[in-house]
Amino acid sequence: MRCMVDRVKQGSDKTPGKGTPRSGTQGGGKSGDARRDRWRKHRIARRAEFVDAALEALEEHGPDLGMEHVAAAAGVTKPVLYRHFEDKADLYLALGDRGTEILFERLMPAINTELAPVPRIRMALDAFFTVLEEHPNLYRLLARRRFADRPLDGDVTDVVAEDKALIANAVTALLGDYLRMFNVDSGAAEPWAHGVVGMVHNTGEWWLAKRTMSRDAVVEYLTQIIWAAIDGLARQHGIRIDPDRPVDANKIVQFNRSDDTDVPTTDDAGEAR
Image (cartoon, rainbow, N blue to C red; front, side, top):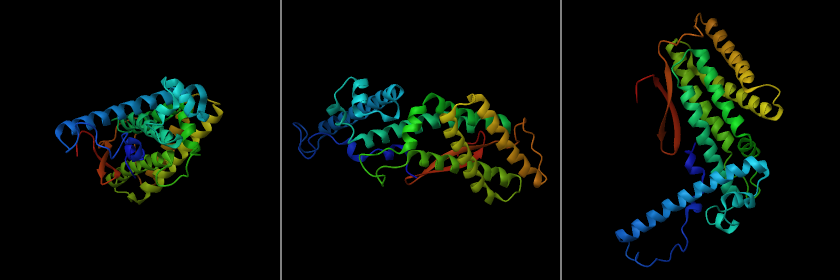
């Protein structure tokens, strides 16, 4: 899986007049390099400002927002936007990157908090549902995979599916280490992790659509379901886990990057790898 920033089309970071040297840059001197670096940083910062504007426009117009809505929120014209985004799909990809950042800024600290099993599960679920509650239109936009400007291919990815896979991989690593610690077959970690993540994801979609209960209520129900599954499976192997007492070896998830893949690994709390 590619890292988050790799979702953004490389072409969107082009500078005007590529291939035509600017005055004072011939020969590739330090002055020209510094100027190009400043221009690149300016474009990155400007693009980030437009993504912030797009998030504001989403709040007002919902998942059907157009480039004209983003331009109005940013206080610029549409041609200015198209200097920084190739098309609407490119903007959606940038929004996907921002959504992933928002989610993982909340979720990873919650997953890695040094709490007893049930409070830890509850905190992780609350982090996920809080992001859904605060940014419902962003999730709806990305979940629809509305890339009408170009087909879903190697350049336009399914952001929600990527995030689900990344979270499932992280939970797999976490469960695997706990299973090995208790001398239980760790092969079950991967299907269990994907099953739990799929259940939470589907429940999140249902909750966004219906809102028949509070965030706290849905988080508590899911916490009870997940803990009941863990506790039941543990008891089958003669293992008793206190739901309200931290496990002796508190495992945490870390992300080690290998080539262009985000690889989650775990370690004991307090030990940096």
